Image 1 (cartoon, rainbow, N blue to C red):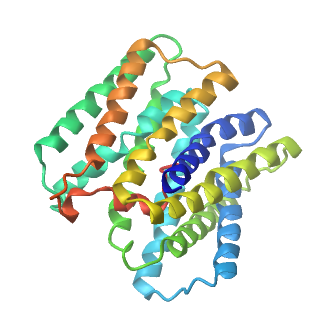
Image 2 (image 1 turned 45 degrees about the horizontal axis):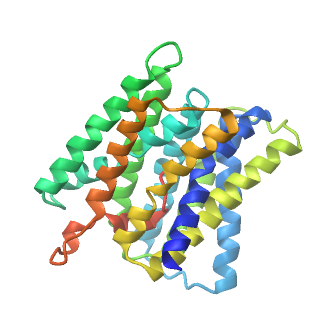
Length: 303
């Protein structure tokens, strides 16, 4: 059941880029999309907290970090992600974004939190080669460098988010932390909307439907399923199963929009995903420093 829940979570997260494309087709702006997503998710997760009577006893510093993670980290990452989605295929975006496990490993090594083992070095080289193949396979008039830079920027931003969140994740219950992150993101995006003259919610029922799908299915349900699956498996297993997410995105993008990946891009995508799996496979004698997966419990997904 734990594995099934993790796969359900990955599928829900993987559908988010598809919902985003459909929301754009319905006239939703990128600014409106991220604001409504986080605001609605914060309300729903807050309702879940109240229904479950989860104790919210955390220090002021931890609360400030949690809200800041949403206001500055997750809000920026999501804005870059959905802006990139306007400029490139969902399948390619998901593969570029999934370089973040490697970036987290590099950051952890540079900060002295982990050691650069041969296994990690192999995963780093494989992911780098895979990313180059994904980008090289795009080529031609259909390739949008600005979109690719935004996608990589989203991966870098999420990397910083994880490394900062790792300092508080052991002190704050996951559901509480996620609710605070969503509230922080909604607050900062709402403030930005006020300063820039609003987000223009002049779209119809179809737009609201896809926004609801993003907030409910690809945020709240995806997070709760991930947490439930994590309790029944291990962090490493949950992280490995989460690599199903870009597979779902690629499959749904092909079915909904006719997007296809070239053989070179498919090979690159396999290298990126396999490197993420290699990072999470732990030897029986490995200690806590060998696992990057616990950081994923902060939100379960980079988008």
